[in-house]
Length: 340
Ligand SMILES: NC(=[NH2+])NCCC[C@H](N)C(=O)O
Ligand SMILES: O=C(O)CCC(=O)C(=O)O
Ligand SMILES: [Fe+2]
Image (cartoon, rainbow, N blue to C red):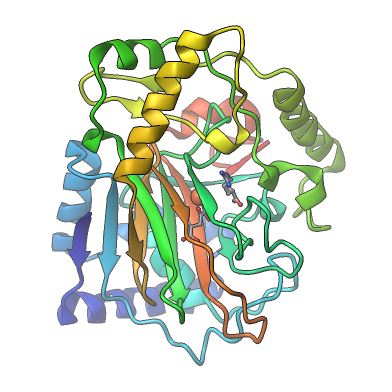
């Protein structure tokens, strides 16, 4: 893991910067603030910017961990019971830190069909979701995946800022660079012979009764597109880019077994087994911001027991793209962040 350790001085400067921005804007999701977040990020300490730039440009690792930020456990309040409730502003400092780090790597984006179209997501236990395959599950492992693997505009990075992790729950990951795959297997995996369906976090049953402020018609279009990807998914490659250091997209839990293409399935099974063998983990502690490279690695989570007492494990999540323009057809304006 590529690690950026904040020094005492970095920490102080970032705290001052965050306070200055919040003084001017009040909320981390204020539109004028988001319009300028890339500019504000230039006021992060130069050593932090230099390290993030190295990670982004040279891709030395499947993830970048910013460590050393201090979470104010009293100020953030209770871990929410659901992402859909009214939000207190208790995590404003933490949210802004996550957005500033994200903006060193690219542009934050959101999904109309996920967590009410919000830019920042909550990752915490939800009663009734215990054994699901969405991030609010607990008792079942969250099977490793590419984030939003089915989506052509999926993020280049997934940022996870830990607010609480009292039981030291492990986030799992594996990096494609570390896998032993023969050339023939890689060649097969680079061919459009695979089916990935939308994961359940985008389905209407997890809509949570909140659609943000998007017009109804647009929301219907967004959910119908997901439904179309579910009923009529295209054949796609799971590896792409340089065969010697390939990028990938896969979420085996939501992929089809194709009986009509045993060769493709055999290559896929070798790939999955390699990932299983190389899967490792990291325990995020409060203040850690982990940016998973969503092209170079997969991630998931080990099971744990929920408490439902306001002290549960809690992360904030953001999707980051290096190419905002590639999703222009599904965003309402050049500077809009929600993908429909
Ligand atoms: N294999 C899986 N469980 N894939 C789905 C991953 C979790 C999903 N992206 C969520 O936000 O909840
Ligand atoms: O809870 C974790 O550590 C990872 C959750 C996850 O995969 C996600 O929210 O995308
Ligand atoms: Fe994930």
